[in-house]
Length: 468
Image (cartoon, rainbow, N blue to C red; front, side, top):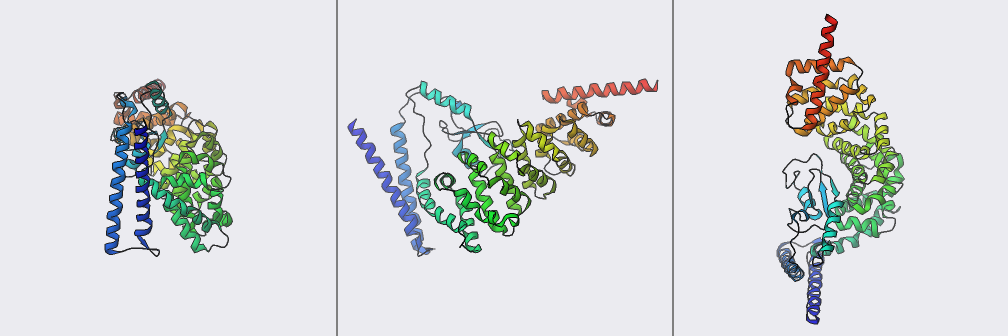
């Protein structure tokens, strides 16, 4: 026992020593008087850094071999299909599949498909899978020979975080100080946006470890007030930093409950660069993953600003982010849904669908609100039924088909206008659209298509009776 303890201590000491060497190479050998070294010296330094990282990798594998002594077979449902190991921080994505956070985050940085199903993801959303997480924890407790791994940053992440976090406080000081020039604030804000984008640990460090960090970050925009977009580059980088930090689960509540965050995001949806508006909408979408935040955002100007962005923006990405944010805010939150409808959501979404913009994403919004009679009335007045029927004839996507059928069926059920039923009857007579849909394998599509067909037949019978 004493020997194994001594071996473990020696291994830890070796690892710490290698990390110090790596930090020295990165901080001293690659830089000279504030500039990056050139030529042969740079190549030598890079080679040395690679050598140390390889040593650290061997030490990590050695530690893994020493700790991996359990003969118990881990259920395949508890393993990430990307890492092939038991999950530490399981996240579920929009395809319904669950993966280890570190690996799926890296995957989605370069792909927009689900690794397992290969389907194209209409939105990149990752939500903690609490059920799987609890099941893995319980399984590990029952199988006492299995110690569930704890999240461990890589050796490179540890060293880089040590380097970067030491610079965060000075950057924040330059951003928030009244004596800083605008140029200095812009440079510091740009660097902070870069650091929070590249290093996950910095996002945690910024909010959790630095007092009043959020308020200090927002100081320049708070000072500008209604002229928030008078310095668009500064505004863009501050909002980008907010978005980066909002993706860290532990930051969501802290950010939303700060009295300056949501109002400034609402302003940034209306004023600023295309990137600013897009990232402001993405931040609200990220924050709305938390139920308590939905109420805060729903009671602010942000909901109206998101709807206006859908109505007015020419940027498809910004419209998409705004649509996803509204979906998050209104899902299982009836008051937010009612507010959004009263603020003109149906009209904004319908006009975009008629124009062929962000159709798939906005159809999901219409599905959510189409059971409301006011929404059906607005859609009918705008004549969107013809656009929906055209989509039904042309689409090969099952999800799109299901969404359109739900909306059309809601219009058929809720509308008091015979013109809707007349349009459906004409569609069936000319294209047999609903007969074709009634023969599909999708249960929701078949059921609603059959209901519409019954209505069409009753409508036709009524007309025949009138003629007689």
